Image 1 (cartoon, rainbow, N blue to C red):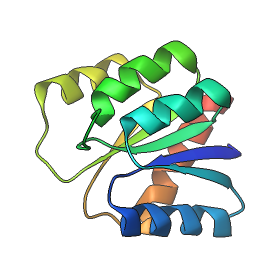
Image 2: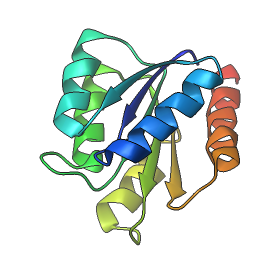
Image 3: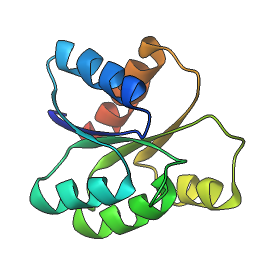
Image 4: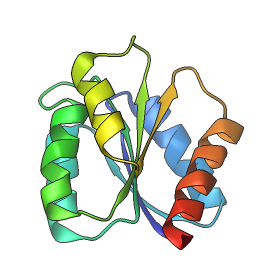
Length: 123
């Protein structure tokens, strides 16, 4: 995976994730919310999208459903600090190209999720 879209409404967290991934050699674009993620997804293909679930304007699950129509092969890591919602659980069960990380999580856990998705792509 080379191109990553980081979607997070909390600026400091978004910048932290993006810089960590850039330091690992990935090319990263940052989006503030689901609407901005859709805009970027329509313009550029991403190998991976790291997206918060709870965001203003367009939440992560709704954005994911729309992004799948644009980038059907993109791998997704959903991040959430909230307990599982029915729609989130359904999406996770239906799509094996999605990982979910519960906040707070470590950079090691983020990299483990990325590596799991990368290894699935090689199968």
